[in-house]
Image 1 (cartoon, helix red, strand yellow):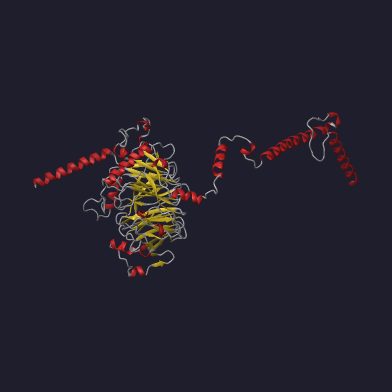
Image 2 (cartoon, helix red, strand yellow):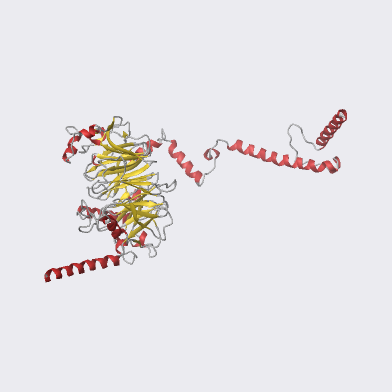
Length: 612
């Protein structure tokens, strides 16, 4: 049986060879000549059909392979210029870039390119975003703000600007009444959210100027928006003329332009996320400081109308803060878990880092700045806060779950010849020597800062802030879904006074929540909510007592800012991950009615007193 099978197999092989030979197929190259065509009579009918399929498929694949080999051999590793072709479009741009850089001896590294930009100052025209076309109008606005600051036309901030009514501050629900009296009647008086910046909003602040309502917004791409809301506050429906309209700007006016976008100006001062926008309390509001994940700190000089470099480094700067008692000293936190202080009068510091001594760069009459970054945490330090009346107390929070309170009087400060940094604190009536209790505190010699107290949250602590008017309380936000309040933080941080449940798991696409104090409403804390509204918390009771919402809110308002002036204490801004904002204000009709009511009540009181 096996011999019969072997004989049949050999016979099939012989027939196949004869078939291939009759078709003129060369066994070595496997190439079928296109000129020759097989005849039907040269092979049996049953075998012709499968043979045709085998013949056509190799013919196509071989031809394509031969063509591709020929093309690749002629164009492999050969530029358009060497081939004698004229490049166009993207190829032309690449060719021009190659020609411009071919003559340079060495291509600058990414760090070198970054350092060149970090130390440079540039004007509004250089920083204005493409398509904005409003650099001229922005210049008018900044000049007006600079004149207001120089004329000292600003809000006289009270040390304790609480909105309690006379005699009711001791009542249990006095703080709740004050919060609801101010924030309970706010409304969004524009129909749709306003697109302020192109990317996700990370920070927002109001300028501490009463006569001009200026909102400043920073996003993930390094865009800074200056938004003049003066017209909106006084004319919510946009019926009036722009307050900052200047002569010669008629070509920029558009009759169908959204009134909310009329006074919006965007700039690009940074190449990375703007982490903080800061107006140092206690200083004139003629400079707006911004820190960024690109490792730089810049200041927008209103009078000079340019962005100047303050400091730069290789690490991402996550937060920035200063004290009203020492406004020239800015404290920075970084993504590597470090902290440092720089003096804004020192001029630009090109490089600051954990292993770099910046003492040689401190000058221009600047007495103090830390020599280097102090490494405090093993993980990201996301927030820094300075006590408003005791500038030697610095509060840091980190992704390692901890919130730590430090005394910086023993930090390694740089001082000019003949200067002593201890004298700085003595001028502020702060003891230069640590007390016996402070001596027993946990001192970490690695960073040179005296740790006074700490608290470990369940998960990452995203933010912690002193109360801005007196520092008598602390609010912290963490990923363990808690908002915590300490009513007497300088005594102990062992356990918070209140711990309220709040969903803080924002995820990857929403900016992390940061519960913030209202500067002029007593014991009021505001924080975004994943259910698309803003929560209002009473820090005296630890309960959420109100919320700010609107039907047009379609994304989580993660970033919240309030105006620091008492006159505008009912002005709240919230931004989301789409770069859009909502603005809550009080109705003009209500303010007018309240003003008339107050006048009437005073008149009635005078009449009663006269009768008596």
